[in-house]
Length: 366
Image 1: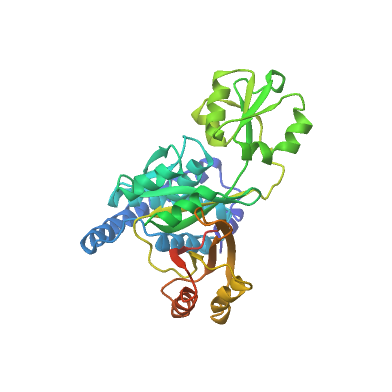
Image 2: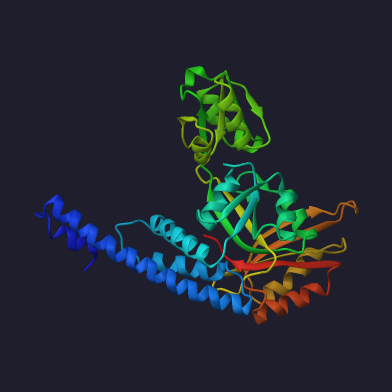
């Protein structure tokens, strides 16, 4: 019998009696959490002996999927996932402290994505730009980095693609974040707003809403949604399009929530690290290659994937900087680079490449 069904059978119990039950359940939960933490500490000790990384994306993804499958309600899947993310974050912190660098400043959507992936326990550091995020991880000053790679409405982040080609870091995980924009100001009153500031993408994603609600408030572009929030905090005539986190960080009031024009506004972020994760049950592989410009060459290049029954999930082209009209191709496909069929496809693909690099195999995000 499910917990919700058991509770429904005892409607005559008083509030005090039900609260005593909650106290008893809480005592069990705390005991079990500490039991879990004790086992996690032993795992951490074993990891240190074998020189394994504390952060194991494959394992954490499996845990989250399993506990969500185990849940029968009334808590929704999203709530179960959020609770267990914090449980995992807290127990991971007992094993070792993580330092996570993200594309800043504080309260950007990349900051939100980093917290979504790693919980609240690690130390989070804002990088000035995407290049700095890569550099901090490459030089060992940060455990992992978090950078945006593409948005469902605005497309890819070219600088991230370029740095992936140049860097020796691996993609360790991916994060999909629903982007919900808030209009924030000091007073929270629409009549005080004279201008709206934000990142160009955020302004573009809310254009129709702004035209309908604030037709006389011109938009002004700034470097980030967080910088927009900081500007709004300093000027009562400004409103910022920013994240819900920015409201807390910059002490602003909400004028309106969920003002994006499209509800399916999703940004994909990557976790980058010095060492790739172990295979999981549902992996994705990313790689980049370049070829000579010949008729039908791209079709021929993708045939090894088709022959091995590998599902291609994304393809993106980028021009080569020093060779006009020649391109690099970035592809994502389902599978891990350690699988026999994937190894075979990569080997056959590489035969016809001028350049090829596997950017990483990592658990597929949800």
